[in-house]
Amino acid sequence: MARPIITLTTDFGTNDHFVGVMKGVILDIVPEAQIVDICHSVQPFDVLDGALTISQAYSYFPTRTVHVVVVDPGVGTARRPILASSDGYHFVAPDNGVLSLVYARESRMHVRHITAEHYFLQPVSNTFHARDIFSPVAAYLAKEVEALKFGDEVQEYVRFSAPKPKAVDENRLRGVVLKVDRFGNIITNITPQDAPMLFEAGASGFKIVVGSREITEIRSTYADGAPGEVIGILGSMGFLEIAANRGAAAQLTGAGKGSEVSILLGEAAAVGKGA
Image (cartoon, rainbow, N blue to C red):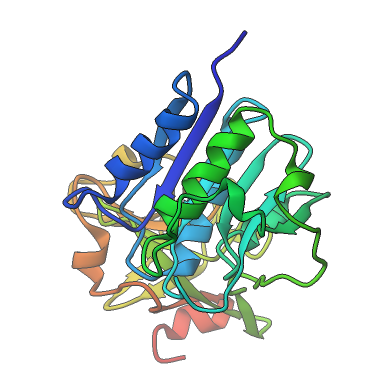
């Protein structure tokens, strides 16, 4: 029989004991579990960054995987701990929207308020629910305790939509930087559906304005750019990225999370940044 898989996604980093303790709690309950670290470098307190991270990763795991997602600035407050179940996966997380982009991808989700305290570690700390609630619940799920035993299903739970690009007019589209990865690549919220003209063969007559740079080239790979050249690319997350071959586009452009990204077409592109 396959070993149960539990993944961890947090903003805890690796300098403290938090992640190790979560693993200890899980292994004490289900010693045969295989624990996979998806990411512990989610930006601190950044629920959107956590939502992006888990939404990009969860579906690559075998069905029945239990995903623990802890980006929890409201730990210890009235925010609920929840168990969200799709046809293939379980998610254990705070009810603060960190699963929003999973909800958007899955056609059916059942969300339960976790109230069955006999599955918790006692006493429950007000500051470490990852240890005392989320980890043991995930472990018991991996031991095939039925989801319905953890609490009642709820219909109202926190969710948000990721920022969407907006058309200023027929020749201008305005987006935003969602995140900057560790290589300095700038991930925007613009998809091929938002701006198909950028990704057509031989595309021209456009400008992408971000930070201090105007980009007029879309390339297929990072290596297609000259060293230090800032280019556009369709990244693996499905968004337009601004990148530099062996360089940090964020540093070269001066742009960061939340920065505006403008796409100019036709006459607007000819006029340029000030259009």
